[in-house]
Length: 429
Image (cartoon, rainbow, N blue to C red):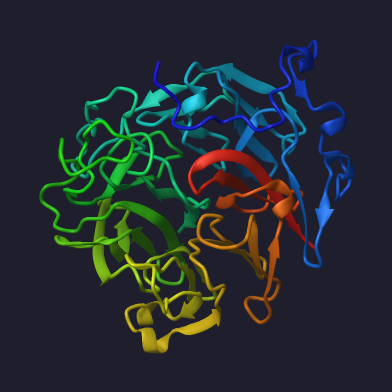
């Protein structure tokens, strides 16, 4: 069995078999969400702009959609239909501790992955089957054989939390892997599915980065097996974000991290998909050094405009730094003079979500004086506030999910910026 890249349980450990009723439904008892808007029994706290709380005891809530939530323990995967109040569907899954990605489709299918293998359930976790990724030519795209079996690499692990969109009446799942930091070296790819997870293919494969070879270590190194597409000169360490602009019917992706002798690792790409031919066309629209607004994440599109937040830094740690929350027309992405700086949080940030006029972003605990820093605008960037939820300790919020049917955003709280710790829910007032 593979060693887990991080431990998935929260401080409030899984309740165990004593919480399972005679009909097999896991309930959360006095720690349940309740039916009121604040669910006071969950120790909900409040700021001027929002309520917030940690997840209740029970399975780690990995992702949510509308009223559904997908969670796991060390050896079980679970599905809720009432925003994690109860877990009526579950399935033993020996490698649940190794889950790095999950997505709930609109038709109810659940796609989830361990480090290097995807699985699909089409029957509310009664069963699941492995999914073999296909390359652009329709051939099986198989994970490489890792030098260290304990470090097979994060083939599917994302940093952002929105991965699917309605694209001309079809739900498209498109995401990139945030990799080469834990779990072993892997190639950086953008994957997609247009059939609710039945088929998953490579939309874009980055080139072979000589600095992240498979040498058996957790993050890769300068020796070992080269990984990636040898035909592609565009290299990166990993992918920060993929997003969709319905006004253009186009996808955008940004990558990191550094400046290498072989070229920049920070890129913005624009891709279009032809469903009739099942083909992608991608163009690198910006390549830049690490101290720039293009080292970023949280790409979001609202009313045809693109918003993002910058993760700019430098090798020597010296500024000034090109950071902040920016907005522009998509055609002006390569033109910094046409960008509007909406807010500068002063520190490195690469996670942001926009929904119903609320802009929600977060600090990295390793790169700012905030213990758990939340950046918040209730009015599309007209006014801003920053909060430090330091009562929870030092965490970096990542994988910001859209609000569930009760109005709560969900986000991972990572130790450092990558090791799984807690789950935070936040509800705008």
